[in-house]
Length: 315
Image (tube, rainbow, N blue to C red; front, side, top):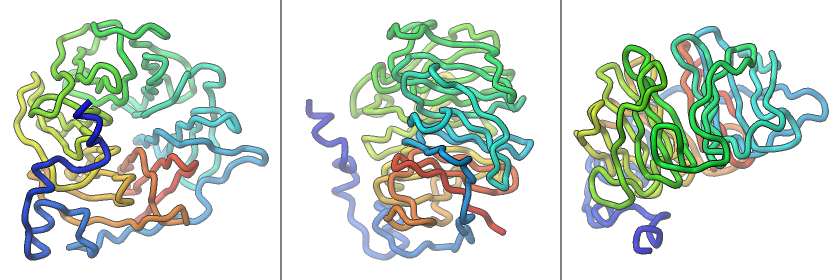
């Protein structure tokens, strides 16, 4: 139980760290720094998205963007279809998934602009075409487990080379599972715990151009970085409580922290470039941010558990 007694606090190592200057504080407890070292220049796109009359979003657990300017919102409410595709103007292109998912979690577009939707309580991942056609499934719906064909509340997916991918799995198993392009299980790493290489909650996952694997261990307030085979390379404890993490085409990582109401831009070295966000449920403020996606044009799409999807632009 010791692990769960501390799930809403930074690790002991972080709490014990001492910092004097703002620069030093950025390296140990960045969430306490009030002013971004570099303005990122993002402003909220007001009125986005434009929901049809009678539609209402529930908890927006997942968001995604693709190379064609499509923006996806994956939510848990009954007031609209669970998976909705918008254009950049916020107009609905199409939607689907009514009655399919037990509880939506993350959603992610792959290099072919297909969409993986992760159903955590359903223990399954669905791969859809942009038209909403089911192309593949991974896991066994309604049957939790810990092998190549079963998950226990998976949370997210990230892509490797040659069509392979990684699944953070998740609320139940506390592991990362690795697969090749043919959906063949290639192995796993991780277990429940607070030691390096263990997880309290592997909540989100992404990979960079070198195929380093970044796992947001949310409830331990850390990001762990691994080789493709699962060797731990680094661990960051200075950024905050990472709900969502994504490596963007500009070569930076973007992390959303729903507790500290912040989006942070980070170099692959761990150096913080800048951040934005303040705590509130008003437009442009980002409390309860659960997932993040960065479009090729630099747009940032955020999903919030208070029922909001927000688009931030550099325009």
